Length: 425
Ligand SMILES: Cc1cc2nc3c(=O)[nH]c(=O)nc-3n(C[C@H](O)[C@H](O)[C@H](O)COP(=O)(O)OP(=O)(O)OC[C@H]3O[C@@H](n4cnc5c(N)ncnc54)[C@H](O)[C@@H]3O)c2cc1C
Image (cartoon, rainbow, N blue to C red; front, side, top):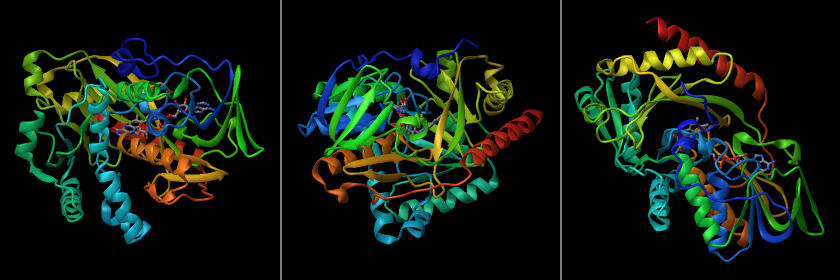
């Protein structure tokens, strides 16, 4: 396996990197944004298109966090089935969130088209794969609920799944034709580039190290510059370098790692995922599989490939690929990388008001491409106009999670155990 950048394959295949030099001046703007992922970049684009002056400060490169490391599945909706969302949030708030995020793939693919973003966008649908008969029961229930709430889902049997994936490891699948895949780091850079084109100023390698509200304005300090702003969006999700932030966003950090092969031959590409759907499965310790534009297979699972259990997760991934696609033989991996997912207790993202004209947004719980795009754009509008009703969820003054470090360690331990056992089968 090659030596790897933090964003693995996505950094290696990035062709549209946006320029973002460090901040070396003192600026005054309408909106300051901390974090250059999907949320921050979508907010910068929406604010700049409204004519606001914007400064986006990113501690590393654009897309350094989850946005540059994810699987690239542009899903409609959250992880939770719609009836659970309504049960948790109530009829009106739940339906608003479901409807808004159900349209999120339209927004993502619409922005890609409008701004000509080169990010391997493929709207071939996603497959939620039944890893076991119990998984098929779960999918049947999600199919019923999804269609009741307006999603045009299709339930596929094992034969149909075999035809689409080239694998007979699955008992059925739920196809969402409105979803798709992107090269996530390239989508993030494309959003940031569009924001820059609309007038937003982007600063990389500019960690916000201190922050205060004084004289009716936010004051942000980086190593070589400062920003004064009327409004502030903290869009750091699971990558908060929080010393500077008044309140650490609250979530459980769950590791997820991915492994990419060399490009398959043309014959192999015609056999395995020929239409290019993005896939994940119903297992509790879930896994994912997709192809990139060059025809590589990318398999992912919970766990940290760069930590102590790294060799174990790598061995599991190789074994997994062979179980899914036995005809492929034993294919080595060329890239691996790991990202942190910010999970909230109820798996619903949070918009937290932490001062005058200031939001922190976090807790996408594994669904951030569509939601990050939507939450970022609406947060910009809400902060600039005061219309909080445009947000997909009502903002909260306070949000707390308990024992987050212990829960994160528990998930990593559990994933390592499950991957060890699965390798023995
Ligand atoms: C491995 C993995 C797989 C995933 N797969 C999918 C998927 O297939 N589909 C999907 O929809 N979602 C997926 N997600 C979730 C999705 O990637 C995230 O929800 C999304 O990227 C969050 O975007 P964001 O912009 O809010 O945060 P991030 O992209 O994490 O960006 C936060 C940024 O803030 C910066 N930052 C932090 N502190 C400071 C500071 N003090 N000053 C300046 N900058 C700072 C960080 O450097 C970082 O770049 C996945 C996540 C992971 C980790």
